[in-house]
View 1 (cartoon, rainbow, N blue to C red):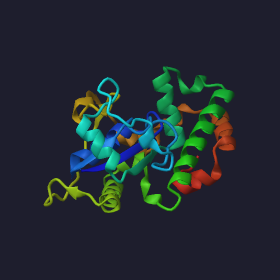
View 2: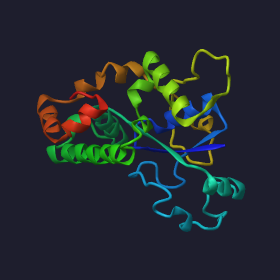
View 3: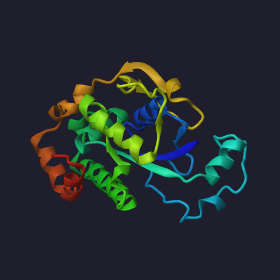
View 4: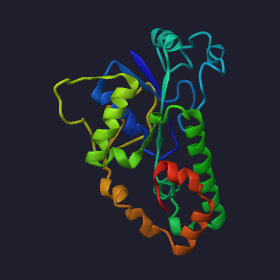
Length: 232
């Protein structure tokens, strides 16, 4: 069994990425909050001596069985990070916060932009020598880019497909509710669907005013935008 620790800001599609990996590859498990909150800044193990954090399995705390925890402690943990276009992410966060984007004040926009900067920078700093650890949400929605991303994931993590003869990847347009390490990704699907073109065609841009875009352009890191191949 291979274990991949995932990281990604809220509302960036981490549940979808987990679904793609576990639905298409065998003998792999994506860790959600084990070894660190997935929405937090990534922590490299074992340099932080994480084995001393939880030296014993605790049934009232651990989302894993005793056997699973023992396997994780001995595994060569790999990592995967997911990023989303900063404007798409802010638009998604507005829905999460139940606030229209147009009502965001300049300080609120700056705070969100700085959060995106800090988090995405931490991903590149963490995987500086292994850029294949970082994937873009939008690429997982576009059929052509999805093939490239999934091929790279398979090669990078040394995974085997569940169906060796398959020519297409198992995907879904279902939205996911918040998941955890005890749930199968299938259990997290909802009846709602994701309109992929909303993100691939950047339809969320209509929610921002020119003044807001100017504020965000001045705060978002130009270096990170270039490295993630996003334009604002």
